[in-house]
Image (cartoon, one colour):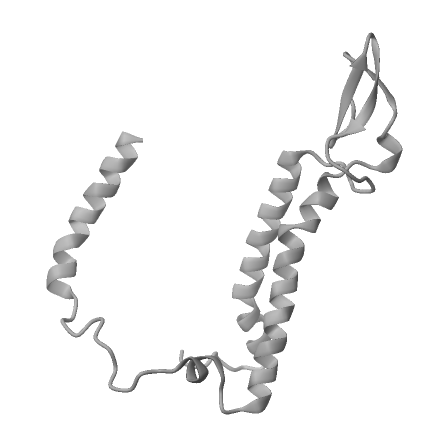
Length: 157
């Protein structure tokens, strides 16, 4: 921890002289016209406003799906693995635990519900992490994938 803290302080101290000398003195000053919330959120183009509204709900629903129900589905055990017999030597599948009563026990759900895949916590985390990384790479590559066959370049490039 202390090594990382010292490296961080060193990097800040290295950047500090550049910030004093290299940055413009007008940085952070307000423009002459103040922007209202309406000007910032809404465009004059009615169709663009509807497209932005649709994209908001599309991306919000995707993010909500990946943050809440998908990990529960991937982690929840299959319904057939519940109430199976287990012992101290033979455990239960992912998402269930063995409740021992003497030598024998039954597999019970750690959480409520069943019908999922019963994957381990590490597997669910790795799957979601890999998906997010690949999704980001695909978003970065999409302009090239679409515009190269059209022999066009992205705007402002």
